[in-house]
Length: 291
Image 1: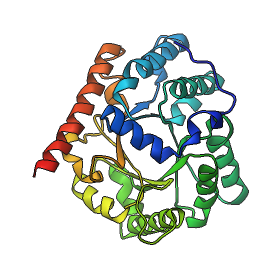
Image 2 (image 1 turned 60 degrees about the vertical axis):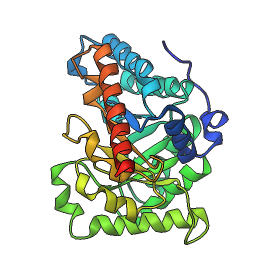
Image 3 (image 1 turned 90 degrees about the horizontal axis):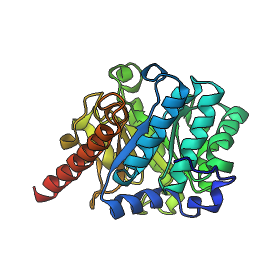
């Protein structure tokens, strides 16, 4: 089950930009689902069981999903063994040709931002995507954007998160300002104000805001969208069609607990949950195209 770590991901999947790989897998497998892997220590009888279950869920669900999203906090909380498992998960995902979104929500200034960017977007993580926090100022995004572009990866910048408390700081036009900056960066990358296609600058928009998704899609025409909140946070597949571009591309919807722990540690139930989410998203898009 364990995949051998690769010394430098640039030699494999990073040869094509992240957005292209994500779109290609979406269309090839007809899936818009992102598999969140958040191993919770209190669900297991020791690290060996945690490791085995996490990797088995990844392998068994791989054919149903467009990408995988490890939440770094859960691996960091496990100490050294957790970080070793994170590298094992990433190596397995690369072997399975699964695009990787490292959910770290990093953000800082100057040389610290540059160090974070090098740590998670180059070397063995070249070609991956990283979630990024923009609330220290737009200039702090540049080290992440530049590192991602150089190595075929991407960033997903927080715009409108899935939690209820997001309105404390993201209301009052703040999210809209972030979206404007991401659109500017995307257009610069694509080379023309009216350029088409997806850039390396993506956005996090919570699936828990279904009535707003079409508007965010319009505001972010070049941004791949990451929509967290499916399942345990209450978002429903049937409400999310507005986030997608014509042809059903441009967005992935993430479910973590709702898959990995759909029925305790039952891996068959995790696979069934992933299939249900995948099919629900596809059905929603099919209904939208018929209306």
